[in-house]
Each structure stands twice: as C-alpha cells, then as structure tokens.
Amino acid sequence: MNVKGLSEKEIFCYLENAKSEDTDYYRVLSSMCTHPHKIAVEAHRLFIEANLGDFGLFAGAHRLEKEAIGMLGELLHAESAEFPSEESCGSSVCGYLTTGGTESNIQAVRGMKNLAVSEKKSLGEISNIVIPESAHFSFDKVADMMDIEVRRASLDSKFKVDIACVESLIDKNTIGLVGIAGNTEFGQVDPIEDLSRFALENKLFLHVDAAFGGFVIPFLEEPYSFDFKIPGVTSIAIDPHKMGLSTIPSGALLFRSPSFLDSLKVSTPYLTTKAQFTLTGTRSGAAAAATCAVMKYLGREGYVKNVQYCMRLTQKMVEEARKLGFELLLEPVMNVVALKTPDPDFVRELLLRKFGWNVSITRNPRSLRLVLMPHNTAQDIEEFLQDLKKVTSEL
Ligand SMILES: *Cc1c(COP(=O)(O)O)cnc(C)c1O
Image (cartoon, rainbow, N blue to C red; front, side, top):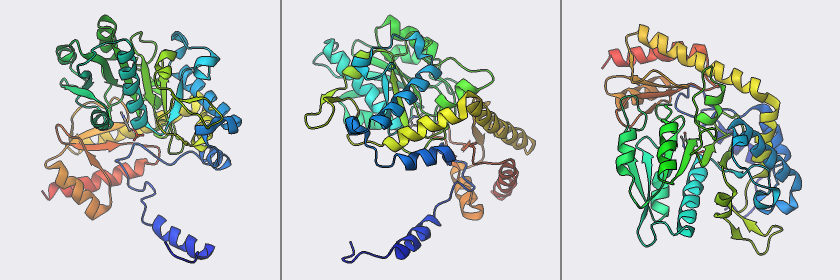
C-alpha cells in the first residue's frame, strides 16, 4: 500500500484505466450475467452501507429482502408449499437472499445433511447426493467442503439427466437429489417431476438449481414445470443477478419447509439478532434493495419482455447458423445455444483473438456455447456468424 493517499483525480484516472480493460459485455456471448437494470443500480447505491448480517440495525433493507423473497416465492408457486410463520423464518416465505447460485447450492446441501443427521439417517456412513453430470461446478465445491459423496448421473440424448441412471445411484446412504432447471451449458431442463417421484418414494430431499432458468422458464410462452408446484421439490436456487437483471451479488435460496432453514442456524451472540442461517456473515443489503426494486419495477410483464427479447435473439442465431450449414447439439430450450463446429476449442480461441468474441465451450461433448443475453443485439448475431464462418472455413 502507498504510504500517502493519492488524490481523488489520481484514483479515478487509475480506476478508469482499469475499467477500460473490462469488456462491458461488448461481444460477450459467454456470460449468464448482464448489465444490471438502471433501477437496480440506483437501489443498490441507496442501500450501499446496509448489512443484512446484522439486520436489526437495517430494518428497511431487511424488509426489502423479505419482500423480494415473497415475490420470488410467488413466482415459484410457494403458495402450494407449507410456508411457515413469522417467528420461524422471519418472513411469511422461507428463504433468504444469497450471494448467488454457488452459495444457494452449498446451503441447500448443507441443509439436507443437517436434517439427515438429525433424523439419524445414514449415521456413521458417508451420505451421498445424486446430481446430474451437467450440474454446475459449484457442486464440486460442495463435494470438497462437506463430508458428502457427490454422485453424478449421466445425461440422456437430449442432455437431461437420465432417470434410470439416477435411480441406479440411489442407495441407503442417499440423502438428496438435485435437478437443474436450465443447466449452465445447454440450457436444458431436467425431468423434475420424475426426480420428485423418486424423492417422495425414497424420502429424499430434492433441490432444484434454477440459478439461471428461474428468471427464464416462468416467462416462456410454454413454461416447463420445475418449481414448488411439484410436490417433491424441497428447495430452489434462483439468481436475480443473472436473468433477473439485479446487481451482483444477488442469489436466492427458497425452502418448502421451515425445518430446512432452522437446520442451518447458528447463534450469533453479539449481534442484534439471535441467530443466523446464512453462509456469509456480513452481507449486502444493497443487493437486496436492488433485487426488490427491479422486480417491482419490471413486474411480470417486464420479465416476459426480457425473456421474449432473448428468445428472439436465440431463434435468430439458430436460424441463421443453420442457413450457414451449422448444426446444433440440441434444440434450444432457453436462451442458450450449443453449436457444433470442428475443433471448438480452437474456434473459440480464434474468435477471441481475431474478432474479440467471447464464447465458451460445453464440456461433453465439446461445442460452442452461446448465451443470448439482454446485452446482445440482432446485429451482434449477424456479425458473429460472419466471423464464425470465416474462422471455420480457414480450418
Ligand atoms: C450460474 C449458475 C450457478 C452458480 O451461480 P453463481 O451465482 O455464479 O454462484 C449455479 N447453477 C447454475 C445452473 C448456474 O447457471
């Protein structure tokens, strides 16, 4: 650290310089995050100092968090779930705002584990959970952090989790299942109803990772069922900082039952509140304000428009790519396209080096992964496909 502080001018010059190295989402087809909505940004600024880790001091920010959770609960049909009283969850809906899908997934599994232990299930032996092979890498962190075996079920030809494989992996030490509503690589939705059946039959928890899909699927013309309407679903992760257009860090974790949240509690002796069920301690009230504000501002209609826009871009990408002779790994379910090319890793590198396009790669099989987000335009797609054609014809 420098001994003497720099001037404001020097600092901002330094910051602007760093900022110019960011993409600002220009030619970015690889990200599930986007520019936050301006309302979210303003709300974030207004609550910049609020700490929800000690919410007794920030009653207003805490109220906004509860409202956001309430709206998310409604979006995910939580009214069909037995949501608890004020006392047990501090809200009429059970859940809290996390830093993102990773924290939500970690906490969902931690809850399963704590509840299974308290029910004396699989005592003394290592518990396991069964997740799809397509699960987000946050579950690798779960495997690493917790004394839990993470079993990966293979996918079917449409990149949904293979139900027979899930069934074959369930044994007496299994405590929970995970299904993905909008997987990160393919945008595919797992058969949550089948998973729910297994979960109910075997008394297992079922966590649905809708980090990306949660703000897409409910607004599609023909939505898939993936949420609390399905009786076996015990928890859902949904990220407002992806298609919810909120600021980073905004995730959310919702539970069907208050016992889940209770199982995550630790006591907090020196704070204004007695207990905490979050993974992080100090946490952003700004992100809660941003999420609440942008959801209220856009309303259902605003999110429908947002999803329609991204799906139109997706359709355009698909149609024009096909005209140029490219094939897809699967018919897009949401605004994620998996495009087959020869040597996708090399194509990705050339697209970046020669034309400044940021694309990513699906793991198995390897293909170009393109996420069509609100920061993309129809013109981007035309330019991108021309550049892609150039790159692949040189191979
Ligand atoms: C993005 C994503 C995550 C991780 O969310 P973060 O906010 O990056 O922690 C988890 N699951 C799925 C399906 C995702 O798309």
